[in-house]
Length: 306
Image 1 (cartoon, rainbow, N blue to C red):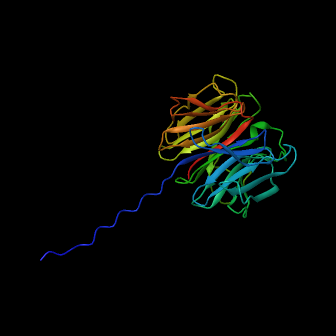
Image 2 (image 1 turned 30 degrees about the vertical axis):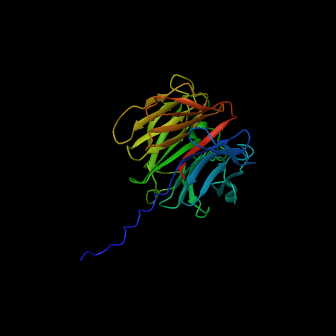
Image 3 (image 1 turned 180 degrees about the vertical axis):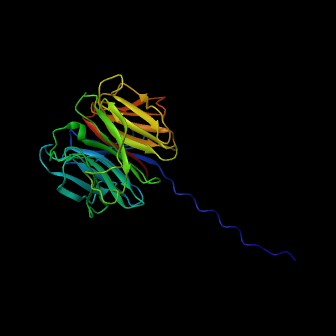
């Protein structure tokens, strides 16, 4: 006698996920969101006092961004958070908690936000709610804030959690050719201070004007934008970090390059510049094309699977 079996349950459908870009318009004080092909663009946050860096926590449904404040000589920098649609906006680091915060990096596993503080001449971090505010690097050498020596101004930031490292840029004066990319341990060596660290390495120096950083953790490649004069400036550069190698220029002819975001699985990068352009290209720079043009002064950009 045959035994009737219940029909097999259909497998659950996988949740459809799609990429989303979030980028900052400095001149308008606004945050934009759109699909990676440039469609469905919308303004989700307004009235930001000179926004510069942005990070996305897709799992929690949050965006974080830095506000440089009204003037680089006034200590009124801040960090805010909102939902992905711009609602539920709240202050994380209040004005004055940081001087001129620039690029922002979210390290979800440790529950930390990292950022560079330009005129504050610092690399800083805090918990996602803004508590436990710390200075990890103080490049001022007693100069005070705001600092006048632009070679000490920290701008870009990224983190390598596998080896416990932070990377940051010190851009130098405009078109000065004295910028650098630096690295140190996340944790300050025992008995040392943010202003007196023995573990800081200068990886690359005499750069035109390095700005934002991104790190490809899968292939262990570091990327950065550079605002300085051509041929080395107004570019995107990349370099493997686990072997001695010279940086390679993969994108050129930017108009004051600023933000960069990577989508490693899809082999693409997104880049903004101060002339208001937003570009997409493969990670090696091929197939570059413009998604937006003349959209104000664009700064930070982030890509997330939503």
